[in-house]
Image (cartoon, rainbow, N blue to C red; front, side, top):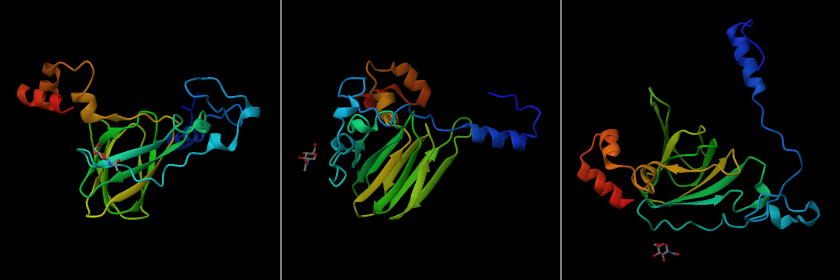
Amino acid sequence: MANLSYLPPVLALSLLVVFAADASTLQDYCVTILGNSVCKDPKLVEANDFFFSVLHIAGNTTNPTGSRVTPVFAAQLPGLNTLGISMARVDIAPWGINPPHSHPRATEIFTVLEGTLEVGFITSNPENRHFRKVLQKGDVFVFPIGLIHYQRNIGNAHVVAIAALSSQNPGGITIGNAMFGATPEIASEVLVKAFQLDKTIINYLQSKF
Ligand SMILES: *[C@@H]1O[C@H](CO)[C@@H](O)[C@H](O)[C@H]1NC(C)=O
């Protein structure tokens, strides 16, 4: 990084923003062969390597959260490899939730196709600010990279939403599952003090995940 200390702070900041560019790829594409990290021979690449027909199918929301995410990441669409983007369909039953989670490698831009949705995210320590918004059809919201966020259907209609993510493999950490369903499990003494809850409640939560 260049030494910007001689510049007025506002100008230095704007230069830092300019320096933050996307990484460039070294070839047009690198279609992965399933379970392999090498690129498929470019002469053998075909249109179907860049194609995946799935997002017209409603996800099954019959589960405890009432939601389902249908991913289209590099694992599902090999042509996405090295390209740094992906997407997903989110289905949420009336009053269901997509539970608090984060994507360690991606910012998410999100739009509602059907229904009414409450969304929110929480910023880093120590502020832990909670940004919250109600979205209608066609509204767009952004969840910044790495921050914990959630969605809740606050209507009587099924919600369909589309998420676009700034990684071919955004990753997902669902907070409840990570804390109470880790393998092997986190010692209940850790969780008792972390969440200021009784051991019987912690053991109950661990049994749920
Ligand atoms: C949806 O999931 C539930 C629970 O796993 C299952 O019982 C049901 O058959 C599934 N429905 C469809 C249409 O696949």
